[in-house]
Image 1: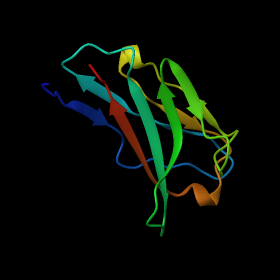
Image 2 (image 1 turned 90 degrees about the vertical axis):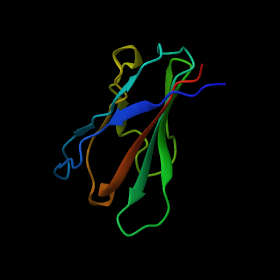
Image 3 (image 1 turned 45 degrees about the horizontal axis):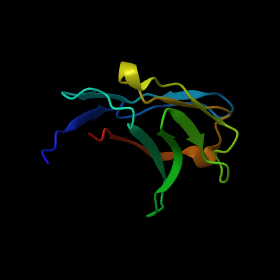
Length: 109
């Protein structure tokens, strides 16, 4: 079956201070309609680490926040897939939150 790309945009850098909150913006565009099966996954790779971990997942219309790990109870879903927004908020920033965050969007037919 044919495949269409989804274009995903995030800011190159986001800065925050320890104890504050930061919004990790993720917007996307597809020439196809937004499916009920759309999924959005956020990954985190700590500075100096080679491993990336999944910290947030949105699927079947529901947000699923990692219930283990350093981000549990500090993350909030701020997106709206119908508005092509997959943003999240991280509260109470910690020094260990420094790293690379990646937003991955899939819009199956």
